[in-house]
Image 1: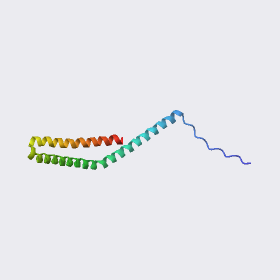
Image 2: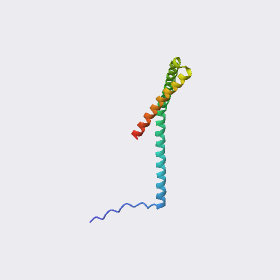
Image 3: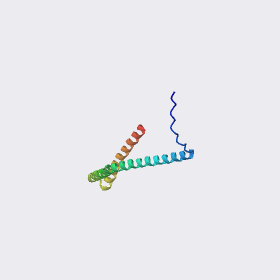
Image 4: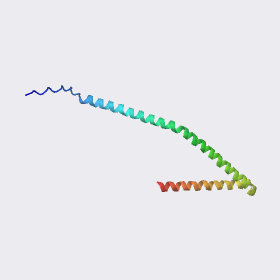
Length: 114
């Protein structure tokens, strides 16, 4: 009968402290790699959002100028009929009412959706 082949020599076992140290070091390296990946993703998203954010800011200022021009037009139009001070007050009331209505609607939508 044939004799079984000699098993391969087993490498010597490493001490537990050495294994734990190696595990901790590998965990740190993995954590640093994950943090680096997240930083790279955040930087890419930030760069991608920079131009649209600038365009939205410019659009906001243009809309603000348009609303201001509308308010001035309303006050100038009312000035003929009720005088400059009263026209300014009525114009303020009109636009305050619009702002209040929009705020109320936004609040109600927020309450309904959440």
